[in-house]
Length: 443
Image (tube, rainbow, N blue to C red; front, side, top):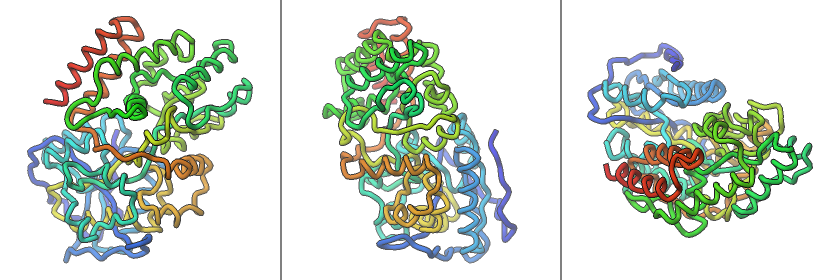
């Protein structure tokens, strides 16, 4: 169930707020900052009277506590501004946003990811921030160019990264020590990685599989395609054809024959991406695919020490990727204040210190440096070290996924499952996926 908090104080609630929005979804959050470095000042609100902003995000209790603490910090510096916050788990988050949009009740500030960014922008649910970036009311000069680009839709800055993350292999270091199998290494080819996974299965006498089955994992497919000069998308269409997809599925069929992966039932258990169901956490595989910013949460779910390394293939296939974005509701009555909050969360050193790397590496390079010494969580330190190690080797950022990306992801999982359980042959399933995915993108 969503967790709703009343305003942090009663300086002035302004709940009579919402007009009809003729669209389906939404997203926002962040605030004030400085020029070349991180700022310790929050800009004074441009509103003359009390302002209450509603904020909505997904995440766990720890993330919620830190986010609320930072919003209180903003209110302390801008006493006219208070916040009404709501948060919940990722499950059902977008469905709730859709309901809010249909009722004309989208929060001022919402959290979204690349699944919804393009659709929200094209449906004019979220505020175009381009002019505010141009005149530095929203100061992104300390944010990596690729991270800015990934929040840009059709040349317009529509959202700001709440953190930076990378696709990664999270592995059970304790288990590998016990089995006397080396840890996976950076830059392994996919063939080498799957051979390593077979070693793990063999060393454990089949009790633990080496790796999750990534055949339905869109981020793994995306990086595999980029390692060959391809892309997941080209504009509003798929960036690959049936033969490439067949090759991808055959790679994983070979892995299954070599017992590198667990049985189909276990794979389906982890396909949803819920951290608590990841097989590296439940002890059923030595490694799972995850986002690097999820390492602290995964670590909290197991007593084993978890390590992290990039997905197989060249590091240049990765890019500066937003773990999630803060965006503003286009119909907000307080666009300048929402912009200032986004700026504060992005560029303020004290805010960055409080937030740590809970949503990934801080978007601002200056804030990362400022907050570095305050990070005490070992898993956050490992995730940050991983990000720093590959920072100079990242490739160019693609455009964010087109509208229909969520449906494509669902189709990929279903197609991979149909092949695993032999409901369909590889070519038949791949051809059907290409047709259905392109239809979803064209809708």
